[in-house]
Image 1 (cartoon, rainbow, N blue to C red):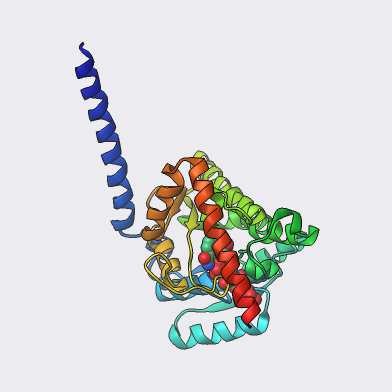
Image 2: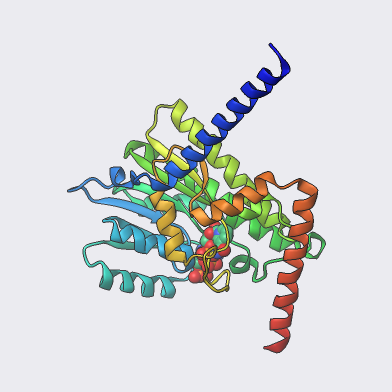
Length: 311
Ligand SMILES: NC(=O)c1ccc[n+]([C@@H]2O[C@H](COP(=O)([O-])OP(=O)(O)OC[C@H]3O[C@@H](n4cnc5c(N)ncnc54)[C@H](OP(=O)(O)O)[C@@H]3O)[C@@H](O)[C@H]2O)c1
């Protein structure tokens, strides 16, 4: 075979593989969600959303009520949760809600109490949403050496340990009530963004935790879909930015995540413009990517500090 022919075959196979990948990606965003399998008509189905008092968690609670679920609203502030419960009741009178108050910075054995509060209702959806940096340690970008012992503990507890322990506690119930769904909120920061070492590290944990658990469910023959939802910038109390093409509202982010259920992936960028940003992380040479991130985050820090000075 001459060299020209070899190059032609290699080129054809490469193009074919690329096109299949692109088609699979597009299909993921166009196919209808299979979330309805976990909420069959005539059956009272429940979802549990952590960090449901605000931001993306509140968006999930609203979307789930609109899709016929009853919802356990988890948070740390009972008064705020009661207000959310009242709003949901007014908008979706047929959906039931219950409040679970538990501080996610303290994922102790007392978490078993959450399972008792769930009781024996038909829980089929778990949204592990609680987390972030600003809402947990009251600041976002921090050099590792400027981070206190307690801040590291809190970031890891809320973003990783609470998620793993709660999933472990609720998994037998979700397996029993299958088909079930677990969505774990992770972040673009899992790709390694400077001054977000600890937070980004916990989100990397969530990604590999989701993929491994997804495989475990498959190995055990359990119809429990597990997805690590990779999130770019979203407008929320924890990320006070203006909405735009690449920055959806919290409700749209939650809707996008629920719409991806059934796509057969254990990790994905649920909001498609975020997916476009994801390609940058995957394809840009690492050293160049680091330079871009250092510049971008430095500008963000400077703007933040400027804003602080003015207020
Ligand atoms: N927004 C973004 O741009 C973005 C980007 C990537 C990933 N994410 C991820 O998406 C998820 C939601 O983010 P978000 O921006 O919606 O966050 P947020 O606006 O800060 O809201 C976080 C929610 O979690 C609750 N919460 C915080 N600490 C808690 C604790 N110790 N115990 C119990 N509840 C607690 C908050 O309760 P209170 O109402 O009492 O504060 C609130 O309901 C997080 O996992 C975050 O890492 C967000």
